[in-house]
Image (cartoon, rainbow, N blue to C red; front, top):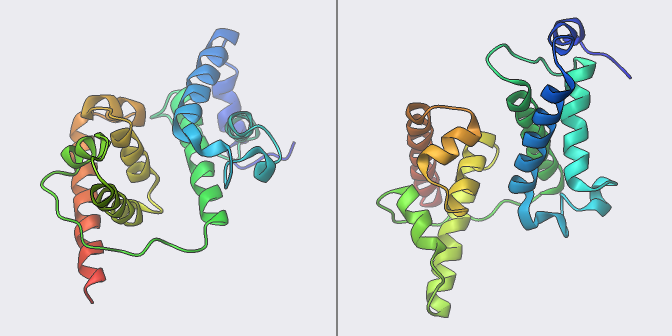
Length: 198
C-alpha cells in the first residue's frame, strides 16, 4: 500500500481506535454512501460495471484506504466517520465529473425560498406541463450547484425531504453554517439565472 504525506499523523490517531470505533465509523460511512447514491447505482457513473466493484463497498473502501495510507489528512475537527464521509463524498463527486461531459442548459427559475421550493417539488405533479416545469427547475438548481459537494449534498437532502437540522447534522455542521450554505446556494442560482440571459 502506497503511503501519503499524512500517514504518520493519521497513524497516531488510528492507534488510539478500538474495534468498536472502526465498526461505528464504517457503519455510519456506509449508510451515508447508500443514502447519497440511492437509485444511482443501476447505471451510469456509480454503476458496478463502471466502477468495477459494488458501488457502496467501492467508496467505503476508498475512504478506509485513504485514511490508513495517509493520502488524506484526518483533520482534528472531524471524527473518523465524518472524515471518511468527506472522503467518500469527494470521490463520488469526482466520479460524476469524470463521466459527465455535458452540463444541463441553464434556464430561468422563479422561487421564494429554495428549501420550500424543494418540498413543493416533492409533491407529485398533476399534469405533464407541471412535471416539465418541475424538471426544468431541478435542472437549473443542479446546474448551479455542480462541482460544490456541500451544495450538491444539501440539494440531495432537500430532495429527500430532510429538514434544515437533519441536513446540517449529516453534513457535520451546525444550523448557522447551514444557513450560510443556503445563502451561497441562493447566490449560485441567481448567478445562474443571470448568465442564462446573456
